[in-house]
Image (tube, rainbow, N blue to C red; front, side, top):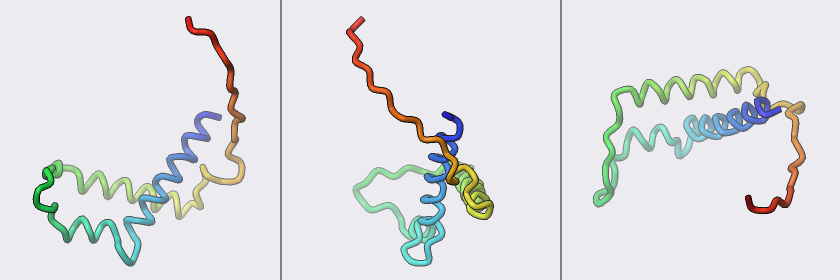
Length: 89
């Protein structure tokens, strides 16, 4: 149950990232490629493999979309929370 919930949450996160990354208007990808950091803000140099890592994550998100988001289907178990009062130890 924990695995299925974690996978569904990961799929939801990746789907959102992919939607923003590939949006025709206001694409995050285009924004990041075209705009330098504003003056007065600290700049963080990208790592040597940042572009490659981002491309791989977006490939995974694209593949999940192509597969129809198998982890986020109708059969994801939704556990009922269990709230218990416990004395301090």
